[in-house]
Every structure is written in structure tokens, then in C-alpha cells.
Image 1 (tube, helix red, strand yellow):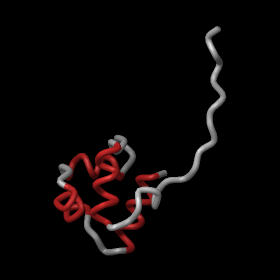
Image 2: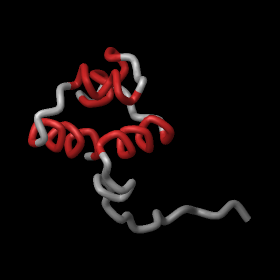
Image 3: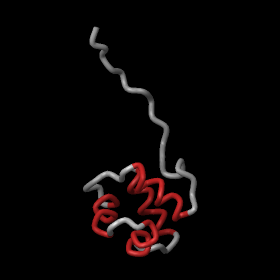
Image 4: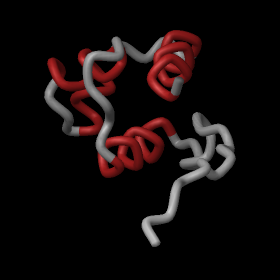
Length: 73
């Protein structure tokens, strides 16, 4: 999960959630909820977090296979 990877990364780099929230200009309560799996990061939030942490946007992502979807024909 993306949030778990970000949480582990900031712990490893000794970046507090408070400092990340301030640097990324994301309200601390929203950041905390996202990091604890209670809400999803928006794409914009994710991109800003990667910028602030100085990592590429692919750092915390894993490739996914396309889902099989039924066509409505």
C-alpha cells in the first residue's frame, strides 16, 4: 500500500508527520488519516509529498495489471 511505504520512508528518514504536513502544505489531520489508511491521498497530495521528499513519483507505486472488465455491448 502506498501509504505504508510513505510512512516507512519518512520514519527511515526521520521526517515527522508534522514536518511533512508543513512542507507539503497538507493539513496534518488529512495527512495522518491518509498515512493510517482512513482516506486516500489525492493525486496532487501524492505528487507534492514526492516532491517534498525529493523522490520520483514512482518511488512508492507498484505496477498493476489491467482489470478484466465486462463490456456493455
